[in-house]
Length: 502
Image 1: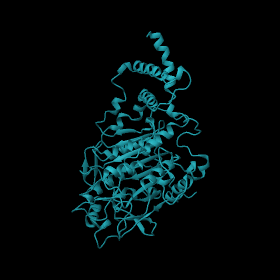
Image 2: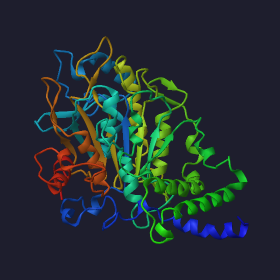
Image 3: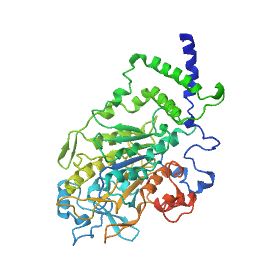
Image 4: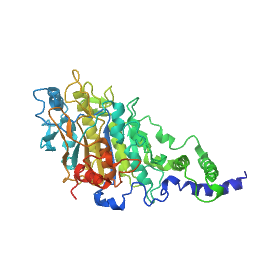
């Protein structure tokens, strides 16, 4: 091919590559993906109450409800259960760590009228009344004991084997990317991993896309001082020949696209793989913009200390720093950041998985992570542009399961999906919605009134104004309460679970 002919073809390729089939309306569709149907708008969270973005903190390994967000001081006093499973050690460690004068603090009544306290290891949040004032605790329950099944379910709302199993970041990435004027090479959704091995626990389900197109995949980032991502974004393998490389790909992409025009005329025939490649090429060309978002300084290591325990690299602090940066940027701001937390010094079993050393590990790891979270949230009248504003950002605290109300061995607690909690802070949750949905019983430690992981995922989507029902996400049957249609299901999610006072 003559150079003149090659250069003329580039304009065709660039124009074609900028209008991906996956980013247009499906045939005969009238709305972009995730938009609310006109007849369901009355069940939508009003635009002025929606969050502009979401930070989800996921305590990988399993956070105990009974010494964090659902502590009842009287439970288990005579049977060494709940907060009293290791009460003496808990009390001693609380004092050693200088976390305050009161082991627990009253919060709100649950669905059974039981007064629930905030426990010792969320002391950094208790020290911030502005955060507690916008906190809603959701009791949750499921039936999956192993990490391998519980992680995908908690992260996606779908069970292993479901073709629609996708992290909520995929729905958020797709929705905002496909909005008019939403096309950009920098992601709307990120998953921040702590740079530890996840050999079999299926934590990578947070990055799964299920039935969504490839462009919906959130960007997975390993937050580690040894990360080579910043370097790779400069595309060192093509060096000074970057423009020529991109031009060549443009040309061959245009030639490939012509094969999808019957008779060389009309619109391109729809092809998921072709569209995925087009978007990947578009994103690669925008690597320079992403390198500004994920600048090298965000990967610089910091040391951390909590309760006299030291770590050479403080992954929670690094992840919190990156999350705040992504969510508060003036340009290319993220809509969703998923912080997968393994703790300051992860338990050898995995992150917060305290089959042994529960008090020691939780007092260090949970407390430190909560402090890192509190540190990136603006206090009243602080107005730091580099910190999160709870009027704009909803924070979700999630985990794959809780811990048993009774001991395991001499120092640990086992997995407990039967009675656990998730937490919503800020965004649509104001002081009027502060409180608890659901209840756990003292007799067995089972959740009696609760939401499911699927309902939890739908709440995140609704907080951002995304319609949660589609063939790629959830169905009416995923919502409890005997709802009969999508309108009733959305209304229950908003009014009952979120408790919105409209």
